Image (cartoon, rainbow, N blue to C red; front, side, top):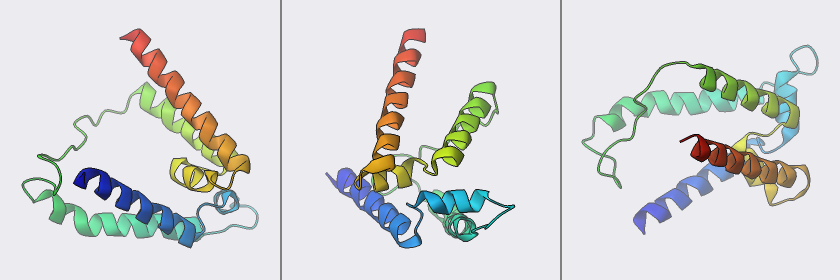
Length: 138
């Protein structure tokens, strides 16, 4: 139960941060990508803030023998850059640029309906399709 409550609290904090920073608005993303027009740097400041918190706390946290609610840290073991990673990143980037949503803000905004809800439903469909194709190959 502690793990579920912790995950809920982290998700709630993340969603509130997205709302407060205005990052649930696709216009923020589109404005950030419009470097030749009315460029909006606010997304950059949100990203730099997240990176700063990560840099400040990462080494402190991984020195612990284990996370608070797990028996071990689950850090990436593979660092290879392969075709699947590059293709997935490209598809993610194109979708983000076209729609103005990435998963967190898209889900946070989906409660309002409209384009964000369409995004969330199609994202879930894409995830289900990926899972089905991956299972079939295995």
